[in-house]
Image 1 (tube, rainbow, N blue to C red):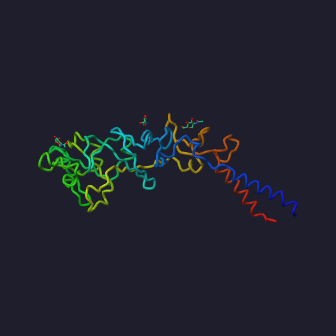
Image 2: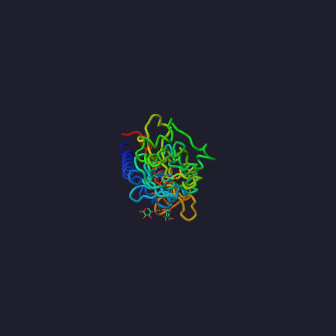
Length: 294
Ligand SMILES: *[C@@H]1O[C@H](CO)[C@@H](O)[C@H](O)[C@H]1NC(C)=O
Ligand SMILES: *[C@@H]1O[C@H](CO)[C@@H](O)[C@H](O)[C@H]1NC(C)=O
Ligand SMILES: *[C@@H]1O[C@H](CO)[C@@H](O)[C@H](O)[C@H]1NC(C)=O
């Protein structure tokens, strides 16, 4: 009895050692960076070309910090919430309650305004508008108030905006509006010299403008391209940089269209097929463990 079981125990032990010594799948196998500073970069985003979803190509740049690139400028990414599918960006050149900066527009590409557009609780405050502004005339129904706040309040409550009031000795027209207004009409058409943006406007009841959070919250949708299947097989979702067709990046030496090759050591790249191979090993180990130990 002893003599027949001993080799089995040795085998079992060596299997265990082999399993524990197997290196875990490492992220360095893909050419995709997974963070920029303190911000995690996950699907559908990518910093390196060919990573993430093609719909979000060329939208992020990780130089010193993470930036969201638009035709009107590069905006600092403050936060990405992968559960709520939102990204909060901040324009360092934008006027806020505490600083008045030169006028400029907020412009997104057509693709951006569809795939990652500002949330409804991001409010654009158009300031120092002329009396001929469309939002005071034909489009005045595009202006609203939120959480009990009026736009005029900004002129009195913000150091940065008091100057508008001082020069004319009256409050120039202003308008709280949504992104769609800014999307279809530039600041020149709107005839307002400045704007600022406020986020989380649903929760600002009774809060003074100097305590509001200035920035833009974007809401994105994740394209259904089978990324889950790819990441479950140990790969990273990306795309072919020429065709923009979805690719599962398995290792630096092989790319598969849908998922990483499962369990086939003959593929010559066993590092890309960790999961199935490990499952196989674990199965053997479980069978072995169920045998009586002497
Ligand atoms: C990202 O930023 C760096 C440094 O500012 C710049 O050299 C590079 O061209 C930028 N890349 C893109 C895609 O804009
Ligand atoms: C406010 O708008 C007027 C034109 O409507 C402009 O002349 C003035 O310079 C603006 N104020 C500031 C502080 O930019
Ligand atoms: C796999 O895809 C990456 C990213 O697109 C590319 O850099 C690499 O050359 C590809 N490898 C092969 C073997 O096609």
